[in-house]
Image (cartoon, rainbow, N blue to C red; front, side, top):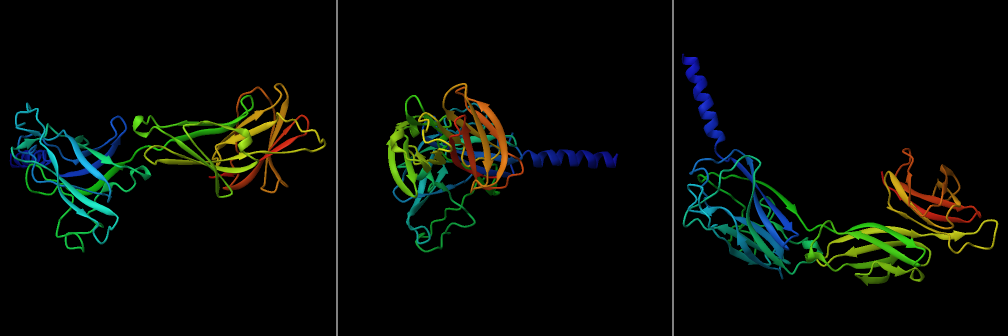
Length: 373
């Protein structure tokens, strides 16, 4: 009987301990639907089911932002005032209470903190381990460099209250609920705006233009307005806004870097090669024989786009950078107007190689191919 009592006590006590939230983290996420930053509470361990355990106590979430940034709490969501019986509908407010500009350790930044109002009392809905609860949304402007300067305050490394220029203000991230015991574990996650993705760069024979295909990871109007900058030999040779087809005459043969930037300064880069035609055995070049490759650098495969007489054949090889040692011959392909996927040999190490494309007239185009393993 005694053993049964001990077992029952352990089970009940264990459940009571588990019933309290014991560990939480924060999450900052850019919302592409409304151009705001959302701040979340993540329940790492435990749950909150009773009225007391769901009660909001003193808490603070602090941030670092570029000095010129204006931040406003646009909307609060959780906890909810007078929500003891899970029937409340008015969120408590989260307010900016402390701001310090240009402390000595962060001369180009400001530090600010946001706290919830706990008068009147506010309560969360029932919480379980793994839940993510949206607390509030912020407007952050202006935004540049993909909001790289905007982040959560780091308890372990950012200046404390006694640091020079902090004016004794304490910005330590903290969270309590159901009591005064600290729940914040120091962990956080930040999800910034998504950069545009460069799908491919290719030569359109019919239009006689260099075409760029870009997707924006479902980015909304917040990031509309793409600027494309082309570089050759470290020098910018042209920039285009919301233009995806450039005249081929603007591009001499050689290697190029393309940098695409959106309205928030999020950037992606790609390299591509405009092939140089080299005649072998004839002085009469086929002016319609062109090719391009992507992605470059490549990993497991590379896509080849060749413009030429349909029905003719091309031969594709990969060699060392000097073109002197053929490492792999991929055989002949018939020109159909479609892209050709080339599976790269598994034995190739990271480095620079030459991709050689030869047509029926023995004309060659060479591409410098970068392989990253």
